[in-house]
Length: 110
Image (cartoon, rainbow, N blue to C red):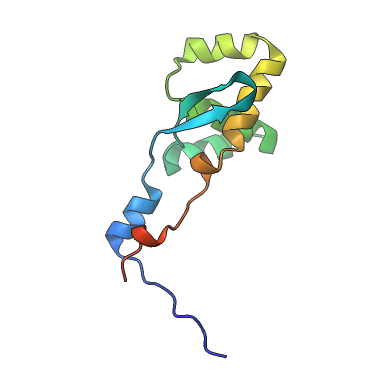
């Protein structure tokens, strides 16, 4: 059986894959979306090392992904309706568009 040849990515391909873009994350229960972006690697690393456990890390990462919120608004969000907060939290943390990296054939040159 012949092995499939791996595609070789150019520097431009890699930069396009890791580019932090703003995406609209659907919150199904709200029938609406929020704008989010995964923070850069330094921020993610700092959040991870500052967190005592995975739950703290996920909560910090969630807040860091919200694009249109100030620190005061995030505090207000946390003090609001708990179920609605978790609807938003779950939508953001489960968003394939936000956290998944799709290697579409049109992004890979070979």
